[in-house]
Amino acid sequence: MPITLAGHQYGKAENRVVRIRRDRARHEIRDVNVTTTLRGDFADAYLTGDQSKVLPTDTQKNTCYAYAGEKGLDAIEDYGLALARHFVDDVAPVSGARVEIEEYAWQRVEVDGAGHDHTWVRAGAEVRTAAVVVEGEGEQQRSWVVGGVKELVVLKSTGSEFSGFLVDGYTTLQPTRDRVMATSLVANWRFTGTDVDWDATYTGIRAVLLREFATVHSLALQQTLWHMGRAVLAEFPRVAEIRLVAPNKHHLPVDLSPFGLDNHGEVFHADDRPYGLIQAVVARDDDPGAPQAWAFGAGRA
Ligand SMILES: O=c1[nH]c(=O)c2[nH]c(=O)[nH]c2[nH]1
Image (cartoon, rainbow, N blue to C red; front, top):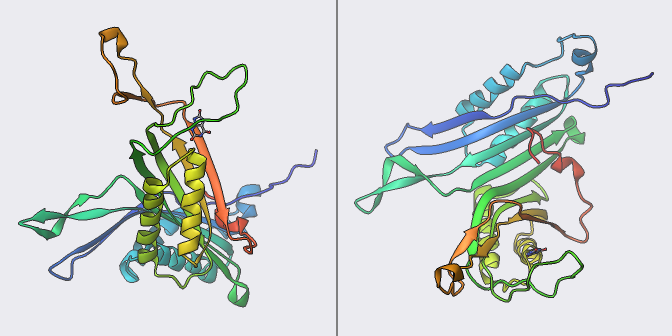
């Protein structure tokens, strides 16, 4: 019975790196979670137990910390590119590297109307993300950068309806012209290149996603996602494609009539599960696509 090792990759997941610039009165903080994944000439480690080509995952962890110290840690996309290029360029058996980063934002504590120099409070629930892939050597080398945000939790208390849907013998849902719509958005956008003002683009895309969620009168979460994705592509020429995943966090009006009360559409049960899961990929017509950019590791989709 012929059996082959059909695929492999390995790396260090979730290196928690905090870089604080303390060489000035006003400190700066960057707080990230980094996952490295290497592909290459590593089959022997699986097939015969020969480790001679294996760069230990412990070394990969050390490299994440060393690069934060040596090269600094500013935009996570740049940090990811530097790490991925290092593994591919400087470690012989590595033919491809993928670096995934989550960033936790901190906001300066306000004291007497001013942001404190060295004290922060965690900002927002959402997490900025980046996934960088570098493959190949020299002239043949190619890179892909996917920026993103996850756990961007939003809710609108009107301006959303859901009606006119297909009805069959199992349908019980009543159409509504006015409902609460809420989601915990995951958005990932693939850049056309690496010459990008990463921080400004992140701030801009986040703002466009929120603006569209707020201002589109929604006939369905599907339509809202389409408007969000289309607006990002229209306003950010360096984005080739955006992928959106939105759990529909249902808010169900509670029947208060047993208590002799009218609800007036104001009291809801925030349902935990099940939830609708609505997804969209919005891309430019002339974009050839890049499946290499999307192979997420670290057990995450
Ligand atoms: O925005 C929605 N899209 C759906 O596909 C759907 N299905 C459902 O039951 N509620 C909703 N809401």
